[in-house]
Image (cartoon, rainbow, N blue to C red):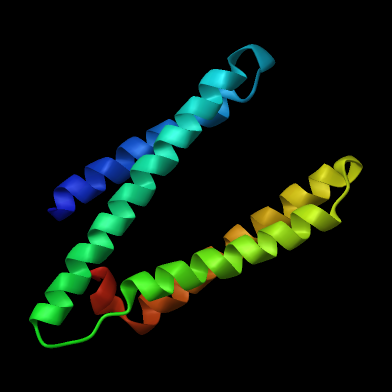
Length: 126
């Protein structure tokens, strides 16, 4: 899979996420919004797994070792665990606090990606 295809698929997923937010803004279009969100996430997950498989194959072919899938699974387990704990602890009347907590975790993930990009710019093509 070329980087042009990867970029195009991520762009399509982003458009689906934007349409999901638009659809979720009104009860009458909420089903369509959920469908866009699920489609966008499926595209993003497929693209990420395919990209990791490609990069891991290239690393192994070059004589190196890549732990791409292990890191992906570890991230899903840690993030999912934190999200599940927070979701169980927060009552329905405190839903804005849960949303704020999840957004904080998204911000933390963005910081981690920025640190990784600064420490290993070649890995990100910088």
